[in-house]
Length: 178
Image (cartoon, rainbow, N blue to C red; front, side, top):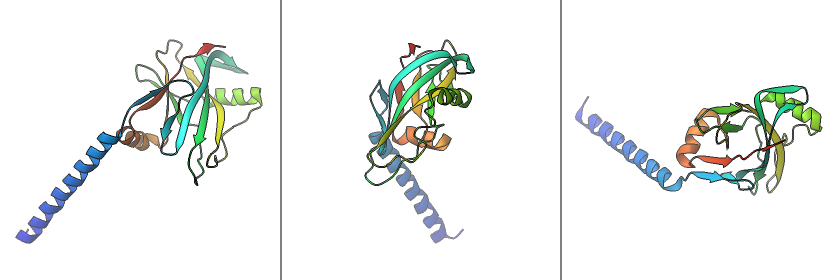
């Protein structure tokens, strides 16, 4: 490699290192972890989520839990001024103290929706300034400890970026038997 090309390569590497360092510093200064309670929002950009209620049960319609069902009443709010928000039904994740994650039980969700006649609320895009509320169901171990809800907005890559830039955001769940 000739000397000018080698110098250019070194300059590019140094520039990339400085840019990465600047981004890492900005991320560290802007991110903060958040633990919310009932009726307190966790917000990602212009979109917010809050838990309005939680109950547990062993059965929903014809569906019986392998452990216990956590039925979480989730409010999704669009605080944007111009952009619709499309809620994905697999976005909510229940996380136990030991780190075990539980996804929405679609079988139990179907039973709940059929029994309540509610259907899939929040299925249409949520207009700016609007919100919707829907119950989501998780089938969790009966001895789950310190359950918390987090919202996974972009798959594994999105979760990693959310943690880096926004911080860990969860909502405590304090269920009532029902």
